[in-house]
Length: 83
Image (cartoon, rainbow, N blue to C red; front, side, top):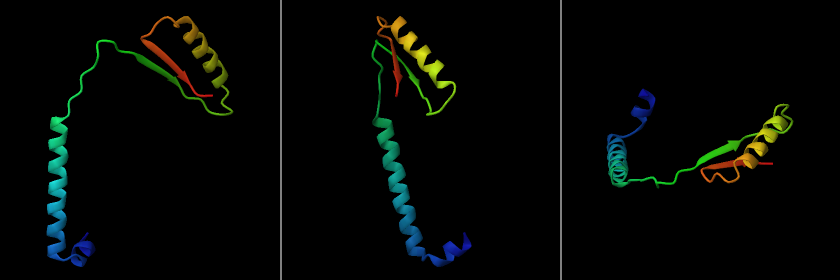
């Protein structure tokens, strides 16, 4: 740290501190203005991650397929799987 500070001029460090203060201030103000509300209808996303050559992947794929078929009418659950 001393090597870095001795290499930098005081003016450069001052400019860096001013830029950092502006960036952090603006980002905190933007975060205060942001708001999110959830809809009444919420869904659960069930995602299956599998790996090529995984010995437990075929049973997991079969389970998710059966789960998707069993809950086909249920719009509050979305099963996903990547092949």
